Amino acid sequence: MLFDLDDTLIVSDLDLRALKRELFGRSDGPILETIEGYPPDQQPALHKKLLDIELDRAKTARLNDGAAELLDLLEVCGIGRGIVTRNNSEVVEMVQKSIGVDFGVCICRDDAEPKPSPAPTLLACERAGVTPENTWLVGDYVFDIESGLAAGCFTIYLDVRGEPLPNEPHLRVAHLSEVTHRLRALAG
Image 1 (cartoon, one colour):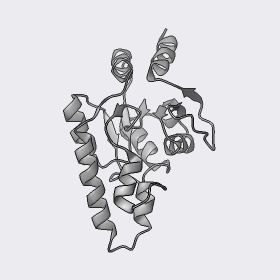
Image 2 (cartoon, one colour):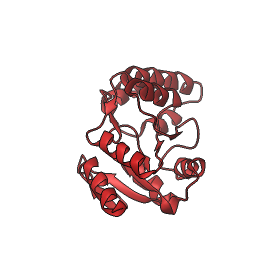
Image 3 (cartoon, helix red, strand yellow):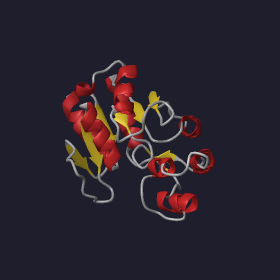
């Protein structure tokens, strides 16, 4: 089972709209793509500032409600887990250490083209030794679902904001406990 990180498996004090305003002076558009739209000589400084903010906010990370129970069930059932995130690998390492959880396979923006591309999801499946068709991907944002669908995964949208999606996931849930319940039912 693969997860998005921010606002899916973990929550923190990271406010993406505020982060965008701090980086760009406005709060619209995806962060990584907005940085790529800047002149090449300005991009390294923006990436550095983004990483500094992410590392600072990672200090406040904690498991999302229902995440511990779901991760425990995956362990009991012998189901591997992993992360597919647009975060930097340093951030993911810091979060794993601070909350004391091994996320398993972790694919970050410095490992593959970021979501919504299917590339990071496919790489996570490859590294975990599973096929996308036998993998669930849980995420809270359109890019998570787009990546999972394009890779061929069973997609689960953690719908915490009530946002419409251009392509429907296989399943919509309001809480991670619903994923746990579904997995328990399948495990018998």
